[in-house]
Length: 114
Length: 112
Image (tube, rainbow over the protein chains, first blue to last red):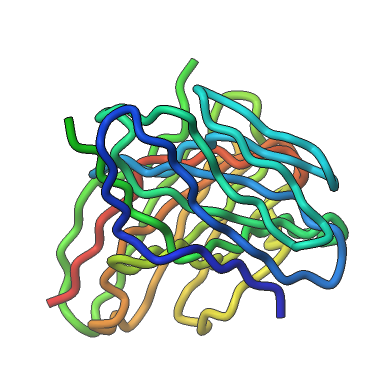
């Protein structure tokens, strides 16, 4: 079945460092792809999305590009801040799937030190 | 503009009991999905409701059931609770099935 795999955490970075969190997916069709962020004690917030190959989603300095050839959707940020510390989830949703369910990766915890 | 609201925030039950969790979708949204998030894991899809009907279901037993009301709010019911049902239960709403889902802060269910 469809699945999403993320790099394992926790990831610890110093403030202003470059961030990459890897995400790959398997799907029988052409899914939409998402990154969600979860702060402690809260639900998930949509960070960015891409709906087709070569689309780039971006928000709050974060970017991810939908790469069909490598089935990847890696999250990047050029300069992280302490406030970016959270758990990041990559997710897919099949375009043909009439239910619209999201399939999540296991999450990657990011800790940014001052 | 209120987002997705869930109640209660926390709940403690014992094995064998039954529980009902509630969700009000974001204003303008008509579709509600429920997810279970075990500690340290990604959310797992339980089911989705649209027009008061269950549209899709994940790999969860029949002990998990739901309902959607005419005002689009929704309930998740779990019968015969097991220790393994301890988790954060997340509700997400969207406009139809193709727009991005917006999540509530969840209900933390603990089974003793």
